[in-house]
Image 1 (cartoon, helix red, strand yellow):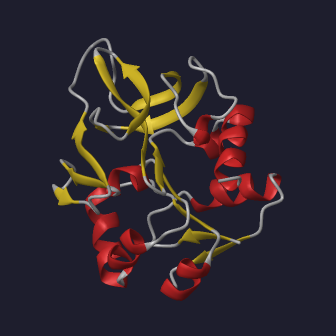
Image 2: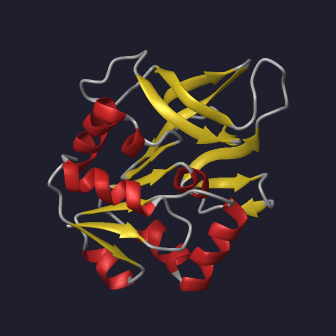
Length: 195
């Protein structure tokens, strides 16, 4: 069973629909016990990192997530919350990935937010099995994680090269939305379910 963490900041319906299409069983939950017992955990996210982090702290889930030993996937703001810190707020993150989250600079060549389909580079690891570099995923974000030792895929928006995906131990994160990325996103979610 997959636990989708419910902390009032998620893109829940799209994630649920994607898991249904894959025939995966899941539960939307904020229960630490259910989350700890799940086979896999997804931390979705859309919106403001500061408010999302405040919600995780208020529910006690900010203390639970770093202790998990099963595969955990953070999506979009979920990835950003798993980093050390974010300029949005600003806020301190969970510190699982050794990266800071910063706002894209305003630029005539690269509008903010970064929205739409963009290709990834240098995909590495089991999450990207059978997904070649140059594959297109769907992005919607104004903040990004710096490149760091945990980077397992990159993306370019304007002049800025940033972390499209991160991994540390059993924790994974994608800045893009696999649940909104068609067949290639479904392949990535299948890879996550197979970890």
